[in-house]
Image 1: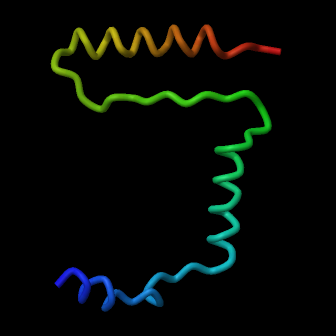
Image 2: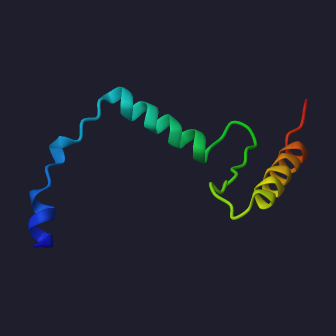
Length: 71
């Protein structure tokens, strides 16, 4: 059953043109080889209490303030 599903999948149904692939390549390049120092933040989308949400927002703002420098 699984083999039938895998073999029947049509690889030609994915339509990528060269512009899409160039944009995707640029995105990967910017992700793995940034021109400047950068960092990523993982953000939770839900919190059990409003107080915990506010603490997280405050801690995130403090992190950004300490990491972002003005030249």
